[in-house]
Length: 100
Picture 1 (tube, one colour):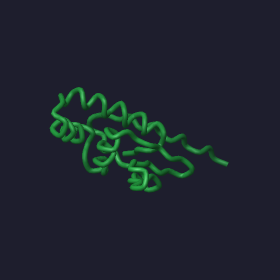
Picture 2: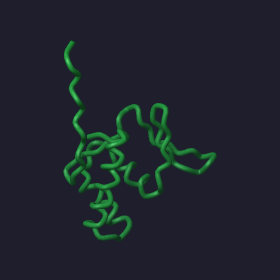
Picture 3: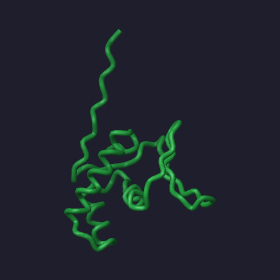
């Protein structure tokens, strides 16, 4: 029997192109008026800022692209947004909610 390879930890950087795996779904619960991240046997309730970031995680845009869009939309410094987005996505990547 061969040993299983250990999955590599995703390190989120400005050039990372984040996306949600197929088994993770971002859905709006109209009855409660909240967004939910649905995963097998887990449910996350992301805050409104996280929802805006996750909506942009399509596997095509880089983290830098996402930060630029949010910087423009929220009239905030791009370097500050980039740091916050990297931190948030790294946390979600460590939980298996975001991949690249």
